[in-house]
Length: 460
Image (tube, rainbow, N blue to C red):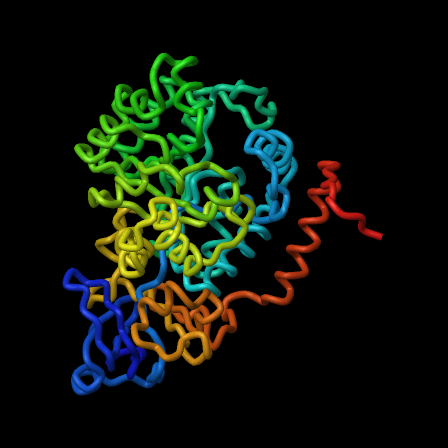
């Protein structure tokens, strides 16, 4: 007997045949999906004490946020309308220096709740500090995710790195391995832990090679920012004698477990290496547009998508991209490249949804269990309301989702077979108390850091 059945919905499975059931149902038993199909067929074979009526609703696999700095949640607003060096050295690094473990936990909890409320059921956190806080918050709220611990052993990244954020080679390796040992496959398997290379500028050759060896030994991924912004390749070439991706390739990092973020500036030779080694990529269009990285305007991301590489979508962070709504990110991914190249056939809604679900799961090395609605996979399911006027006339629910909706239309979220949000009410934490905690923690770190942001207009 199933624990519950979602019935009468417009079910988009994302299975290998990309089957859609206009009147579909999904049966869940324990942590797993046990049946997907036409409502009449599923109800004929399965019974459940709880039947969730999804009439007039869209039923999807949970969305995968392929790149999100949960650690940066309390820094919302400090990165607006500034260049990237100001953002890093006068905003983000002071934040990372001053936030304590309790505040990191509160911020991460807020981050995950905001994700869930817009349909995200799995994230990949590229590495911050207070990994235990980030992981514990994920375990408590019930979300699925991958943690990475920041590693960087070069203190000078074109400007001095704050001393508190620098660790030597041995400490980086010891702490990274300890995080993997503690959190990989934790929370009943909902959490995984990888090794992170924070940024190509501040990781030594020795650290890169050692991280690769550890990741291969533990059979986990490596999450790294690379080829992210204009001028990066030239700066890396000047320092290390090679472009960013050329350096990683020659150090032996390339392989199916390497996961590279932003990636606006590879050349054709490097794209050939990426394809040959099945390297995964995360595309964060909201961060590129907010921070002026140039990824959206560069033809290389479009090129990699057209070549069929495994590319996920990500929000980057609540400060870098400014929102955590993967539905809005799908819109940007589907549309932004079209304007740049004056070609309305680029991408499209269906490809954007693939990138936010099954492609995201594959990029995160988790597509055996999540990313699609199929019997035997984990029950990560999102139910989206289609009642609002903006949906109608609803000629194509998938295109309506990507082009007309937003995450506020998400009504119910199920992760690992557990209902964590029902009728837009989070069931695992007290959201009102969390809101108060986020406000308090945000004020506390800003006061300690002595940070003051200038407003362009007078505030009286």
